[in-house]
Image (cartoon, rainbow, N blue to C red; front, side, top):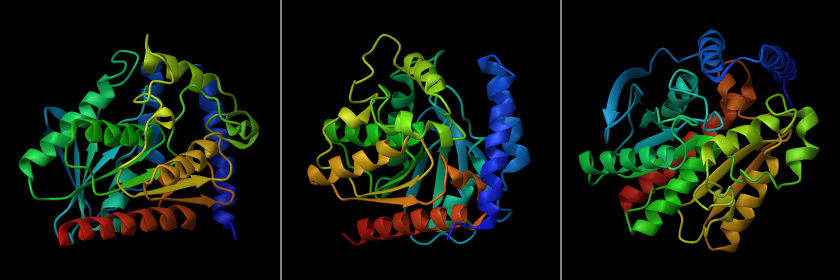
Length: 305
């Protein structure tokens, strides 16, 4: 049963995002507004160490839990439709994932569009993954991500497979954006209940900013159209009330059909990346805990093998 707290917070989030949208801020100001809102709203666990760092020539932050459990690292790729989001907006959820998995998380500040269109974000994710591999050659590495970051994590796994590189141990994805061509049914049918995307306009603009002159169906831009065989095990969490619901449901089906292990869980009444409200409502805490435990199991299995 959906908690009372989440029912209330759904309307708070919807109101706040609508209010922000009415301001019609230019992209630089919009990014700053989201950073400021994140610092007000999202609770960062006090027992997680946070250290600014650079890996593979790319900036980010390490989230280190107080009692790491065995070898293993997690590379986290934040959401924001490839045009926004930052270490600040996603610091709390990355820290909570580190606690749940009991492994250190590197929260990458990849380059954003339109200043840096495709493949800049993917190049940064790839450089960071190889940087982690170079400094931790025998340590398994898992990937986590939300929204655009979830799609980016999947594209990174595909790119690594194409390179013949050592694959990630697992993929933990929150409401991944996998179809920037916006062809799925729920992009329209769920818009009325989605606090983030009440219309598809923001997604369409962001998709074009990111893709620039490339096709929106390019498999490394929209991994829905990629070959998905021989990828690491994936756990996907998505909300019932979000326009990107089909991105997750169809992704799980395509992964299974192509022989890659995948599981998807739909949370009733939840909206896009509700996990950001960890510490405020039980559905957010439960999702992050399950994703963290999944990553911990897969990292342990990689060590054992």
